[in-house]
Length: 257
Image (cartoon, rainbow, N blue to C red):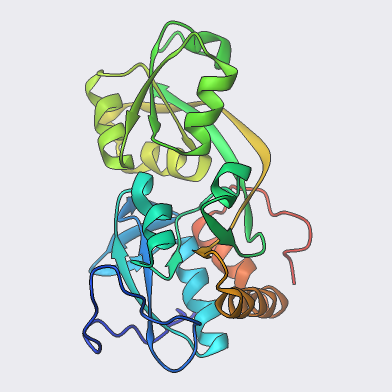
């Protein structure tokens, strides 16, 4: 598949720490995208390029709408607040659209849905969520996994991390007994860390949609993202990227073009 490329300008503008690359997503200015560097296959850094399903999808949307993007990594727990403050124009990070998060930012139309996994090491006694009771369980702070664990298994001890790499290290070293995270990332952890003997204990699909986040009230930029999303679904780009990065994840209805 030919890689979709959008011009990324890294130093064209002098930007303040909390200023906005563009108030409306138009005018030729660079839009700053807050993302993560360590959560493949959705969002990660490879050879100096921010890639993964979510970021490549956003690049394809931007190409359709003549938008320019500049990516930077941050902690997930800080991301939405940084969009709300104007530090970033867009958040791209497999963000589940929850009612609580909608109080802080506005979301695009859904571009995927949350599928979660329980991950552990081979030989674990954990076979499902019931087995998490009394265990130390890693979650990424303020994610759907964090919410799911605290509401579904209140007897588990949630150990919160700011990023995926730290949580994975904790699981690999035995500092935690299990890890709740996106299915696609959990599966890639198994593939990329054969010596760690990781397993996906159980996966489950939710009805929580993923969306790109923008500052509340930025209807022009949101409209461009939604229009571009319709275009990349219609021409098959969405499906190609999904097959490339998330081949084992279910394809929701309406996304086949």
